[in-house]
Length: 198
Ligand code: GLN
Picture 1: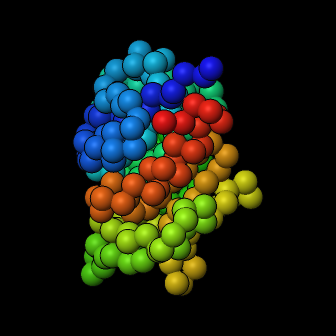
Picture 2: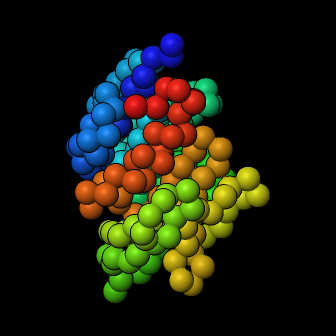
């Protein structure tokens, strides 16, 4: 019998607590990750929303950049939401922060412009069953371009991709952890190897 997976949430900065609550609600055992050695004990990782420059600074201060890249290279699922999406990207329109460069997407921080810094909408997300998901965008990053291996799971009406997946990497421009709807978290847990998901 395979052991049930443990999910880590990067807890350097941002709204990691809300992700932990959502995962625990699905019966997952959750670790708040603040040190690189904790990556050894987890089977999947969420990089939360927050402030990508601050998170990147802390990542470097705690020497987590290389271990995080190694974690992703091991094939274990990684999901970045909002600032987490920025950090997963391989190309940023801005000079800062330096992203982890894991996912073949080009991103502009705060790319929806000042007037619409924050907005809410309903999204149909491929692979998420049931009604549309209520999506909250807060100073959200704009995905400018996706590489050939990147699949778009949800888009705005104008065609802008807002949920993307590249194999074991998932990224969403909005905050699924803020609405009490755990269907995106369920989707992420189902990216774990068969028989191990909580
Ligand atoms: N605007 C933030 C950044 O650039 C991201 C906002 C968020 O995570 N809600 O890092």
